[in-house]
Length: 394
View 1 (tube, one colour):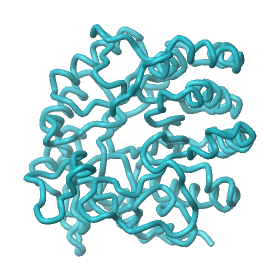
View 2: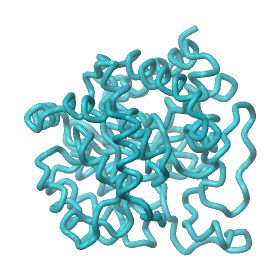
View 3: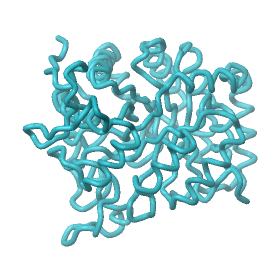
View 4: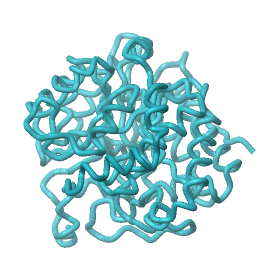
């Protein structure tokens, strides 16, 4: 995504002037030793950015009327069968504003399902991508032929431009992080996905880190570097957002949808910070980023790898980015852009599934994969209860 760089120095100065707590929050950042000690206790983290096949966005996934534990349980059994052990999952501030207690219960239900399948998610608090004025209630159906046509920002532009709403945003961050601050089922908090290079976001981003730290999270905080054409060893200077992300993250995360040589260069450049690395977005087949080429590099450097898209569904992220300008209505792209599985659980490409299982160590003498009755892959391990029926809490 193209990001503007005008007035960068003024924006940073404004952030520091309006929010001096940035310096205080920075002092509370994990040390390199703390971050690396935490990472040494984790398995190699592999997973997907996750939304159920029957949800078009974060709101439809989490709202009481459309929250679907059975669907999540089924899809996570497929993920477990591939050897995935994490998922990156987006939350939303409007859900907390609507009913924080009920939203917390649904998150707990979600974590119970995930833990059953040995999956520990990374939760995303805010997001600058796509629809700028999100609304609770029924979400519109997918726009035919268009990639991710219903995704919504959090907070929306009305809240970002109204500083009187920042108190409730602080309550949301402190509340949701605080509710699960010592929960071992949560692996990390991604405080803001692809933060916009706007004065409001540049001023607010350091505060979001500070609010999350006030909740005394036992999990690390991060925000993924996504600056276009930026690599830490390249000629481009970091934007104000990138500078904040690198300065505030306990563990460093980044997005890379490019060729494997670019991915490796990005990893090598970020290693100079001497902190654990998590790639929280990759895998765009027609752009050169594939499981075949990227996942082995990630394993070589012990970089956590979370691709975009798990089960193809209402987000339509099998379609490429250019569908925003040229919807794929009469014809389909030659290859899927994102996503791993069809809605029935069968892999888009069987060799990809084999690569994921091989690299995660899922294929072994003690654990074999069988095709379930619904077509999805399940772990045939009698000692782990992967196929136990999930009964949601009352």
